[in-house]
Image (cartoon, one colour):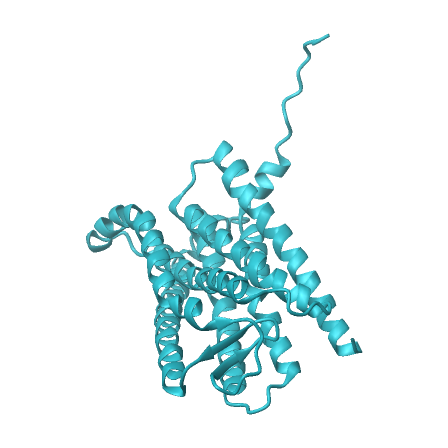
Length: 309
């Protein structure tokens, strides 16, 4: 292994370790700590669903990339590649859908309390669970091609290699089928990314307008940052911004890789590193922007004067 491969190995190992640790802590925080002291909101349920998707991504692609980065070769056969990559792709799609649902839910939550929005605000939480189930079905169908065309490493010229990950290869019988698969998946991604971007822009507009209206009424020391709705909106906007930036970068690099006759190992490695960045960084943003974690940690347990001996 040369210096570049060792560097990528260290980065991927650190990213995987930090990502798994933070996501497991976040899952514990929302399912145990928050539920013991607070009533879980619809936003919390969506965040838990996002953490679950992140964890699946890290335990599938993360482990595979870490093993490959440290010199292990041919550790997955055809069946192993199909299962691992299918779970990763489904989890990635779930992350897109959940981030979209979060942005829409929060945009509706902070919208003006008019008669038009009142009914939507009341009914929308009822659709959270069905929406999550629908997102599972949608992504399992969209990614079904992975179970058909994903194989172990191969150098055969009889198939059209879409993407070579060294330990797994995405192959297709023809360029037309490969183009159709990429088009369907791109339409799904662009649809959800576009809507979540629009919802986030709407939230920024609402928060800015609210800030200007209450600025002259605010008491000294009082800030709209302390409002739970504002905190939640800022958290969702940060998640959407992170995802859109990473998605744009990943799309550009993937397009370059698909059109290169000889794949650059540097581009392939950087592509896989950034593919796990959202799963690693997003739970950190969740925790930083959640005031309840500070409240829980600062709360001291009651001291009993009773002698238990």
